[in-house]
Amino acid sequence: MLVKTIGVAVGLCAVGALAKEKAVDMSRHAEYKSGVVMDRIMAHKFEQWEAKMASGALNSTQWPRLNYTKCVNGIAEAIRGDALQTFRCKNMDLYDFINHATLGSPLATDEGASAAGMFQGTGFAEILPKGRLLNLGFLPAPAALAKHALWKELRGYKNYMVIGSELEEHGIQIFDMRKLLTINPKKAPVKFSSDDVTGHFKDLPLGRTHNVVINEELQYAVSVGAAPREDACGAGLISIDLKDPSKPTRLGCNAQDGYVHDPRIHLANILILPLCQAQCLKYRGPDKRYLGHDICYGYSEDSLTIYDVTNKANSSIISRTSYDGAAYTHQGWVLDPYNQEYLLLDDEYDEEAAVGPAAAGYPITYIWDIRDLQKPKNTGHYKATNRGIDHNHIPQDPTGAGVCEVAYFDIYPEDDKEEGGGLVGFAGSWTSYGYFKSGFVAVNTMERGVYLVKITKRERCKRVHA
Ligand SMILES: *[C@@H]1O[C@H](CO)[C@@H](O)[C@H](O)[C@H]1NC(C)=O
Ligand SMILES: *[C@@H]1O[C@H](CO)[C@@H](O)[C@H](O)[C@H]1NC(C)=O
Ligand SMILES: *[C@@H]1O[C@H](CO)[C@@H](O)[C@H](O)[C@H]1NC(C)=O
Image (cartoon, rainbow, N blue to C red):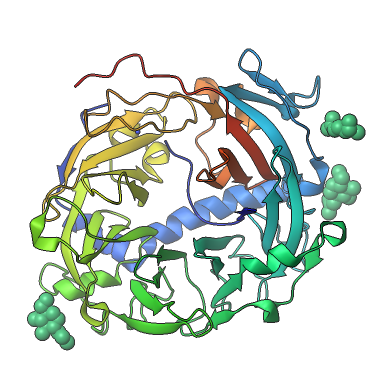
């Protein structure tokens, strides 16, 4: 049995050439560091979400359960004749869809706020062998709901689900998914209480965290972007020991106090940069200086920032590198965690800011050569032609020319008629998970709920050069 997770903060993005690494622009850096840039982007997002709420677009109950629908000639028509239930697709079929309300998070609250991701808590569903979802249960958020925290931040750790949120006093819940195995399907879904968790980490400055990153091998989590920036940990990396999930304990953060306005001088204080996303891995790669170290790759607003966190109480920065097109560095992924040579980076705001390779509004994924952790190189990028799944030919060709779209399923038909096949805005997919052995991909969306899709054919890229 596998469990679908619902929630999170990952923008839509998918991977050409011409991109280039460069030094962080110190004239603009202060603005990022102060939080002004993030606040501006958040305000912009909320503006879009509030307009949706007002129009009723976030009322998920209007979206019925869907049945298996094959992708035929580029279209999966889940409800015949209904344009909003007709999805563009390539080599991917629809298996199921369940709305957020059914999964436990109905629309309105007293404050009139609505659900983007799962507002009221965390829903658990099983993917049955034939590709139907079984709604198993719902775990409420352990804190008062508020409009600024419309989503949850979820990560798997062994048999646990680790759940953070931007809600104050939420902390990080550690839920044992083995509990789901005891649910009688006939009685599902069950409602858990917030006491049903195995562990509850409460040692965050305000209880809020923007992301939670897990290093399963080394049995710790990192809270990333735990407000406020004025805290001693400065919304940087806070490490949490998970060896005993019932007693999650803080291992440390960077101990330097206060803000320092010139990070070139006070290197340690650069750790106060809030990271939107990070990935922490035991280092296995060609840079012999760091073999066996505990390395975090941070996507830190205006840079790719690589940390050595071997000593949790005194972590250090190995390098900070910006690139042509940097607007809001947001998320990324190391291609091969067992041979850390390349990573992919997405910028959340380059399309909207229309800068660098993203000037025309198509999602760009930047390709980085990290074989030298002190001097990462931006070797190229991939420009999506539509929302797609990245395919990995990068070690042979880090320019991105060998990357092609093999499949996609467009879960946001609302903007299909727009120029270029979509609007550049905060809409649609809000995290997905594609690592199930069964091959199913679960896609959570802001407006509607969870889609279950599967790739039917793995096409080869036409042009793969050495
Ligand atoms: C949400 O949509 C459902 C079905 O379309 C409708 O019955 C309900 O009144 C709506 N709720 C709100 C709060 O608009
Ligand atoms: C899905 O299939 C069931 C059973 O055949 C049917 O009752 C239901 O109307 C279908 N749903 C949609 C959205 O077509
Ligand atoms: C932290 O590490 C630096 C070198 O990376 C060292 O100079 C400093 O003394 C250490 N601080 C503490 C508190 O261990």
